[in-house]
Amino acid sequence: MFLADYQEVFKLKTHNLLPKAIHYLQGLFQSERSKRNIERMVEHTDSNYQSQQQFISDSPWSSEELMTRIGVNTNNLLGDKSNQALSIDESSNGKAGNHSVGVSHQYNGNKGKLDNCQTGVYAALSLGNKVGIIRGKLFLPDEWIDDADRCAKAGIPKDAIVKKTKTELAIELIAEAKKSGIEFGWVNADGLYGNSYEFGKAIQEMGEYF
Image (cartoon, rainbow, N blue to C red; front, side, top):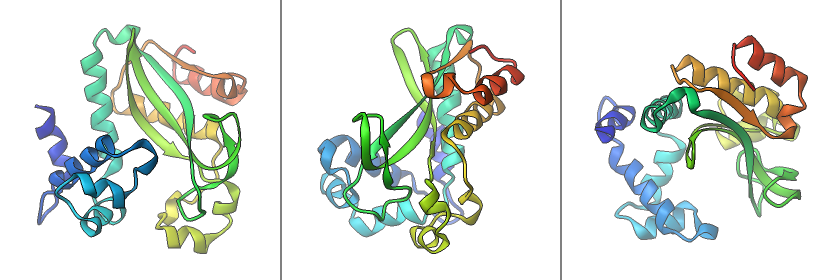
């Protein structure tokens, strides 16, 4: 049932990208945690480097539509929507170079220190001991926002080159979840967001509990 649902996201006018999406997931699950790059991932699938890289970097499928469908399906699968929590948190991936989008010398919460890394803000639904990440947004540091050439070289769309705090990204995630019809009993987050007046006020205006 769900495979057919997600297939629509990857179905273009001329061909279907679902096999490449499956290869990508296979590569993620089968590669060592520290070696999850396209070059290593394709060693575990029937795909090749060029086609897999093109699928991730240049294919016109919609990540927004994919996240929306994942969110709705997760919401339905967990059941008892009034007792589901929508959790907001961030996570970072350490990087050796400076070419990955959003990479910067910034705080890495996973290590508890400043580090060269990418950082994203994520939303997850949970009920009891069951949890599923449903949406995410990459945080762009000022050094990226202020460097149009660097952003263009990395393939960042012009409308995405906007200065936003992690708190603003978190508020957007909650609003987008609600817009897609996802239902939950309350929002929770750690101190970075909980100590933000802006964050609390936004949740209150959405009619949600924090």
